Length: 212
Ligand code: PRP
Ligand code: MG
Image 1 (cartoon, rainbow, N blue to C red):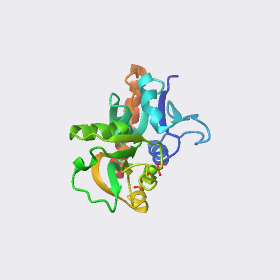
Image 2: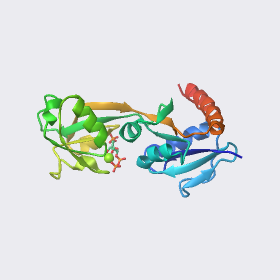
Image 3: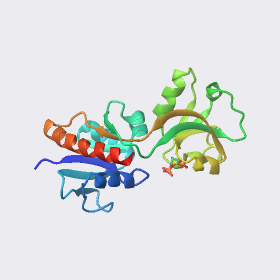
């Protein structure tokens, strides 16, 4: 029997809510995080637990058919991947921040500055659009520490509650984009699996309506 292959975040802020929305759709998945792959007993679905940043490539290659992923990750790494549904959870911003003590006037202030981030494409595009060029340093985590250790003048990262910025004495100065979890679809999905996707979307839509 054909199954739809869905990627969800292995660990991190989307993991739990991704499992929960599937559960609310009546899809029970054997096995949790311990295995990298699991099957549903009552829906033609296989679940792959993957690293966030790898998911756009898996979708592109057709290794998975669909994924629950942050829109911000697609904007950074998967502009070619289409979105079937916005899922309404894991809302966040991707923002630029500077040390609290720095006087900030406009985005032009970033000209020639060193910016630490895990979102190099997003920052470059945002700044290029405003005629600003900065020196981008790619870091994969704990980005907010960079200004405090002299590695950068500013950072660009996800802001959710704002507490990481606050704890690191930073202030948000530019909101580059707003994001939430989405259901993304591989450009390579087969028509057979697209039928399963339609059934899933039908369930997701009623779950989202009930949550309102
Ligand atoms: C994420 C993100 C921010 C923080 C934002 O980091 O990179 O640092 O959460 O959330 P907040 O505004 O609610 O504080 P995470 O804790 O996932 O760790 P990482 O950066 O090391 O991946
Ligand atoms: Mg972080």
